[in-house]
Length: 142
Image (tube, rainbow, N blue to C red; front, side, top):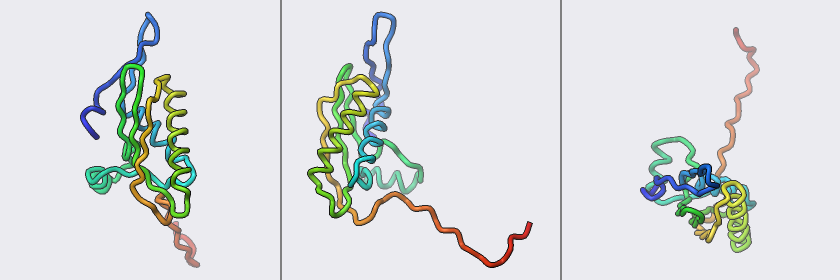
């Protein structure tokens, strides 16, 4: 992720204190909201995100999401993969609505823009399937 996403930002709640959000928290909310939209098969990042995913092997909830968090506002950029046959404009609009709603509801920050970049069209869901267990006729030995 960009260095600007590592800066911790805050919003003033009241005279007694404040709530602090790391940009990765907002990016995770955006990722989860976007992937729940029908027609979105996943979020994708650039070349660096692809290499990190291959080498790290761990799921990143900030992959394909870039956020700029101010003291009261948020701007979000998302790179999405859309399932073939889906209406891309409808899917993109729904992603914008759901991401904005989720961030505003969970953080109280005002979302000023959600920019959606359609990175690819996929032919199957990118969610990994559970491997099938081999069935054997042999009884298990304890």
